[in-house]
Amino acid sequence: MSSVATSPAFRTSASLTIGGKAVAGASSFDVVNPATGEVFASAPDASPDQLDAAVQAAAQAFHTWRIDEDLRRGALRRCADALLAAADEIAPVLTAEQGKILRESHREFVGAAAWLRYYAELEWPSVIVQDDGRAFSEAARRPMGPVAAITPWNAPIYIGVAKVAMALRAGNTVVLKPSPYAPLSTLMVGEILSELVPAGVLNVISGGDALGPLLTTHPLIRKISFTGSIATGKSIAAAAASDLKRLTLELGGNDAAIVLDDADPEFTAEGLFSSAFTFTGQACVAPKRIYVAESLRPALVDAFVERARATKLGNGADPDTDLGPLNNLPQRNYVVELIGDAVASGGKVATGGHVIDGPGYFHELTIVTDVDNGIRIVDEEQFGPALPVMSFHSIDDAVERANATEFGLGGSVWSSDPERALPIAKRLEAGTAWVNTHKVLAPQNPFAGSKWSGVGIEGGPWALEANTESAFVYLPR
Image: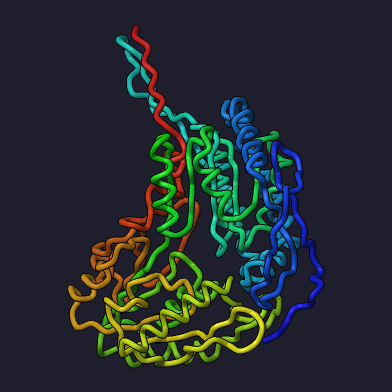
C-alpha cells in the first residue's frame, strides 16, 4: 500500500457558514486520514450559540426564500455549475478524510450536481381540484421552514447536496451538519454554494456528536433529514415527537441478493462484487447478503474470491488503487468482530479475513461461507469489506430468509431470464428491488426504506412532497 505525504498538497482548513458568512469555530477537532491513521487537518467545532445562530439565520431567510420559485430554480442551476467547477479542488480533500479512491470522490460531485440540476428543472404544479360556477379550489404544497440535514461519512457530498437540493427547491432553508469523520469537504462546498443563494438559506456547521441533538431539538427546526444508523434515527424520531417535527430518515440496510440457478456466474459475480465493495463495502444500499442456488454457489464463490484477490487496496490518492481503507478504526474493529463471530459459529473464510498490517484502517476483502441467518455477519449491517455467501434450495426459502430482517432498504434478484426474476424481486420487503443490477440510484427515482431502514422518501417529486405540507385553498362563487 502506498502512503501519503504528511503535508497534503491541498487545502486543509475550512470555515462554518452561518448567515452567508464564513465563521471560525468556537474550537476545533482533529480530522484523521484513514489511509495513514494520522491527523492531517482540523475542523471547526461549532458552539451551541453558533448552532443557534445558524438556525436563526435559516429561519429569517425562509420568509423571502419561500416566495420566489424562479429564484430558487436559478440558484440550483448555478450551484450545480459551481459544484462541478470545484470538484478538482475538493475531491482530494474528500479522499483524504473519507478514504475512498479519488475517482469515486469525483463521482460524488458529478452525482451531487445531477441532484441540483434535476430539481432545478423539475416542474411541480399545483392541482386544480375544482373550477366551475360553484367554486374554485386548488391543492398545492407549501414549504415547512428550516430543515436540519445530517449526513454520514461514507458519501457526504452526494448525500448532503441531495438533501440540500430537495429542501431548497421546495422552498425550505437548510442547516447542514456533516459527520465529524468527514467534515471538511462539506464545509468547503458550503462556502461555495452559500455565495449563490441569499444569506442564511444554506448554513453549514460541523462538530462532535453532541451537536446533533442540539440541532434536531431546536424549536425553529421544522423538518429533520437524517442518514445514518438505526439507533441514532430512533433517538432523533423520539426527540422530534415532542415538537411534531417532520422526518425523513434513511437508516441503512442489509440488502439481500438472490441468485437463481440460471444466472450467469461471471456476469453476476461482476455486478454483485462491484456493488458490494463500493467504498470498501461502506454503502448503505450495497448488497450485504448473497443467497445463491446451491448448484451455482461454488462457481459464484470462486468468482468472488478471484476478484477479491485481484483488488488492490491502498491510499485513495494513488491512481493505481482500486479500493481504500475503512473510514475509521471503530468501523474496522466492528468488521473484525463480525468475521470472528462468523468463524466461531462455524463459518469459513474463502479469502481475506484479516486486518492488513501497516498504517491506516485497512482490512482484506473477505468472502465468508457456511453461515446462515442467525449469525451476526448475516443479520447485522457489516458496512465493510466482508460478504457472506449462502445457498438455498427453493425460491420460497430464499425469499423468506432475505425478508427475515428488520432492515428493508434494497434487494436484488439475478437470472438469465429477467421475466422470471421480476416477480421474485417484487416479493422482497425492501424500498427498492433491482433485477440483474444493484445500487442504481438517480435523482428522479424514489428512494425509501421499509421496516427499520427508514421513514419518508427521497428522490423525484415524492421528495418535494416530503419537504412540504398541504396547502388547500377554496373560493366559492
